[in-house]
Length: 357
Image 1 (spheres, rainbow, N blue to C red):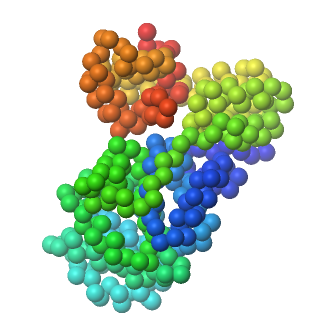
Image 2: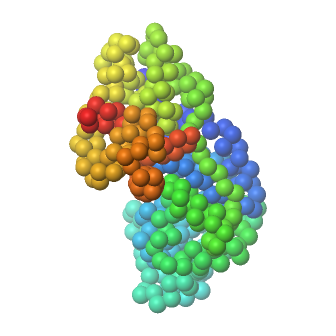
Image 3: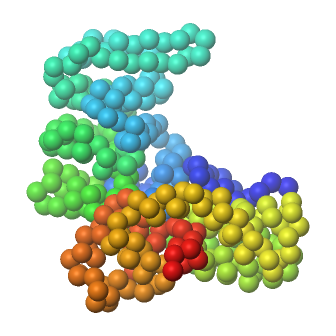
């Protein structure tokens, strides 16, 4: 029997959890001429969700993780590689003759790996325009290419004014759909909701929430009961209570419990505690490193949130200081907010409660 829970990589097929309404909404957008902006904290499954939607749409697509992009040349190279993945090199290489900054393309015959570089570019704007325009040229209005920019907020910081330049190029296109994914809510909101931003209201905005409790309960319980024959419903409730329905950590904890039940034959009443402690122990050094990287204010706020208290009600901390610290830690991914602020990692939260007085 194979562990039915998966975390840490893109998930699909039997590992994919619910998101029926979100899938339908994304598919409607992909079947229109509109673009999509999808915002959620890290590890909420937005990349897996978009990949599933795009795959179901049958549209050709190019996916680029903007964390791999350090300059315009990187982006242009990844766009070209994406185009060549969709279309044979021999059929479209003539289109490169129009590039104002000529690319150098080398292909390894045995592995078919492709390396793309550019001559020293004096006209970066032209390079960006030519690369994006190539995507439009090879696309078809009846079968649009979808370009996915993951962690898009990272790209905006590469060069001043790059957002204005990119917007001016792609707003003229009619045969490409763009999907902008981002995990830093304040930056993504600034890019797409601030009136003075070039990307203001550029596409349909979605915010991905946690998976609803009832849907997640059914998903976990249906898979746990194969190895936990008694009290599996109660165990599922305890899993979701601990993880607060966070997609990544729920899968992680459920996977560990499944392994402990199936391979180690641990009793059902001991599974939750044993599995939580096992995960915390494996991350102990990392948690300690993170904790030591916090300043005193950060430590106080994280400790307050770990005890499920409200930092703004703490009279020892000025409101402006609390706000600044929370915003900084949200940007780094240590805190998230839906109905309230909370420590993003429930195992780190428990580590704090147990280790920090």
